[in-house]
Length: 364
Ligand SMILES: Nc1ncnc2c1ncn2[C@@H]1O[C@H](COP(=O)(O)OP(=O)(O)OP(=O)(O)O)[C@@H](O)[C@H]1O
Ligand SMILES: [Mg+2]
Image (tube, rainbow, N blue to C red):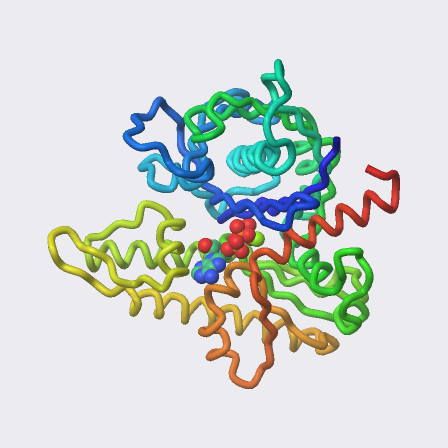
């Protein structure tokens, strides 16, 4: 059976929704070299210990072992994506994406194997996306990298040990970050119009991710070629500055951005220093998030001035969730709109757009 899925291959995290299951799967986009690890106590969930062998003809190293997501976030040799990385061509992005698709198929799609079967097979049609400024040049490359047969074997992952999943991506429908989010907000699950203002209006979007911020302008659900743009700037550089300042001031090093944002999300700003001392990192977070918010507000103001036809501006992405209170403070009398779960709007949009495309042509 072919499954339809939306996958947002983010620089900070990969988000995946499989049609028929509403619960998104979120895996931090972080990878480290895998090895035989000493397990004193097995983790209580597979997502906490994704230890995988990934085979894909599209990767430079065609078959290699990796720790992915949370398991890699504590590792000294981990790699998070950097400004110079392009998710359309990055091996790391593909490794996390394939791991997510394989994981979803053994948890959501097919529970358990038939007797005598050793390999799970899954076929997908996926919707995904690229930043505004990468789309034109790279959407074809991205599609070609995703489509095909790949294989993921779970090694020391609890509950999935030794399972191999053959992931066959039959088709990948690539859309534009931010614009997909708007499509999701404007439509119902059955793709009927939900919000006429959004569907028929001229809407500005500021979608702030980890490494890029996209500013698509969408008019009657068509992307405006002239005014849509993007910045090579996201929350990650501010998080890196926070990590550096915290280390300089308190001698405490966060092993990854993921570890820092986990704390910020929980509102835990007190860190335990070596020895008995504690320190409050809130003032450092406030400084950088305040700066990031000011920058975003300036960019939005500039765009809106250039194109006054824009009726309203949505601020989306994980950056919007992180910076909302700071942005509202900087925005003064400029009215900006926010939504809940803003970092998930794209992935739901990708799923809908994929469904839209496949029902228009041949049925899946
Ligand atoms: N509620 C929150 N509080 C604090 N930080 C958050 C929150 N939600 C998301 N973030 C952070 O915001 C940043 C952007 O998240 P997002 O999921 O939009 O990035 P991404 O889509 O993976 O990146 P990109 O769009 O650049 O590919 C990340 O660093 C993430 O950890
Ligand atoms: Mg994103």
